[in-house]
Length: 113
Image (cartoon, rainbow, N blue to C red; front, side, top):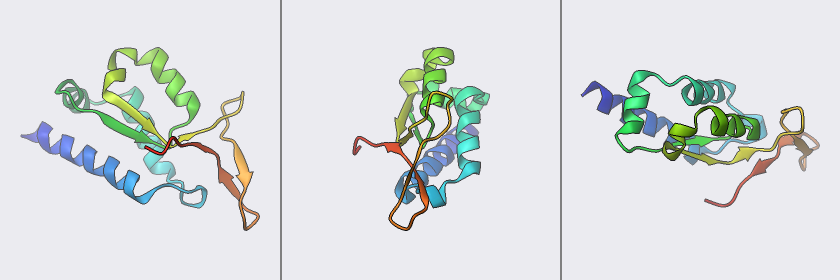
């Protein structure tokens, strides 16, 4: 029962992230860090949830994170989906552009999913 609750909690967190959207001024560093940890150091409960056939949706991950996941976590890739990927430069830093108010905004790859 505990694993099932953990799975629903994770799915809920992912859904809230997707519903709310993440703008540059709203970028949630804590949520990003949590997703990086989940991606590269999943708990046994998280791995069990994935092996039950579930897919976790990662939002606003850097291109470099996804490339690393393809190299290091390939055996789990069928349980991952990435949306609103943050574009990075050659050094792995997030690319930005100037918005209408003159502030900086992150550049996302967004296929409209």
